[in-house]
Image 1: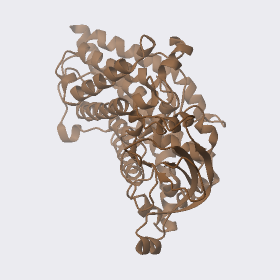
Image 2: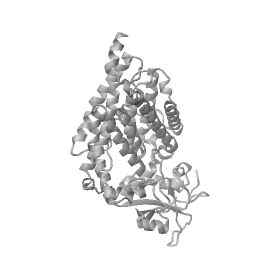
Image 3: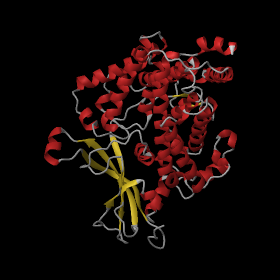
Image 4: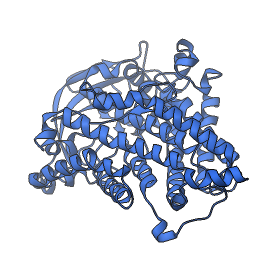
Length: 482
């Protein structure tokens, strides 16, 4: 007991009890959204008859290179069970279950969330290749060592959370500063709100802000990402002020677009630097168990050692974005939009019932849930939910190289009215029977001007560019639904 009482004062941060509560509950909410996304989308994208079957992937990739529960068994029943188990466990933690059990049981709950989601990411291939997947895993691993309401928050884990937030923000700032010249001359937001992967309901309005204000936005972004993050390591109240500024800038990004849970998780991490003791007082948790302190110190040492690679990447002139340096995604590098596209192109999938293609053939469009299609449809807000197929369609419009492996299977599924695939879309123009042919057309999209919006009611204006994929059909007929 004497050893524990000596250990507790320098190891813990009792003034951060509220910070930990907010951080853990919000992180559980992000986990819930991530597992819900897997439950709803994994079967069509990566299931047994998905576009990139995970079972095929695990047969050729060894466990040590991509650790996952699904190396044991990878079928729709197992992956679906794991996804819904993750939803239920995350919901339980969000409701406070991890604070109602012994410390060791709380750690087991967080570890299960982490390993279950790691299992999806490590077999998810291109559909799980986004930086926010690694960010959730890295934050989720650290959460295992945050403790629960029965003990004061560990100082080491809180500092590692700040170190993670620093790398997210400072890495993103460096990528921009070293990348596209428009970030340095403050003009990137002349284009970005219009050309970002998935605009939101306010993006049209953000795009039409005065250009001087766009330049202010970029300059403020540089301050928020290249200067403010250093404040996270200063004494209070500077650290809390820095965290508050990061939260405000992230909320601005939340309003302007759909970036899955990237912005929300960044906000969550900022609470590791917020001291609520002035409002709530200093809590009096029980002494820290010695075994817990040893485990936290060991985990912290591991993270410090592994941080060598992302730290080196930060100072490298050839900085890489969104890379994991180990198969467990424990310490990663982050960043986005080192370059900004000036022109938005969209792939529109169309089908027809006509067996013979002529100049007068009538084509009907498939509508996606999030990506632009119908020019009269206001972009919707989906973040923090991640529409994985919609995002890949944005990449596919940038270059055919991004379609490798999954685009042709997508067209094949549409030709047979595959139910799981159609659930990923907003509308199916052929509800009765499959189309005879499907094609893909490339359009240039731009936001309408204010005058065009008043005259036509449209949010977008589009111009035909070229045929992206010629009409294809299933040999021997149009097939049947599955």
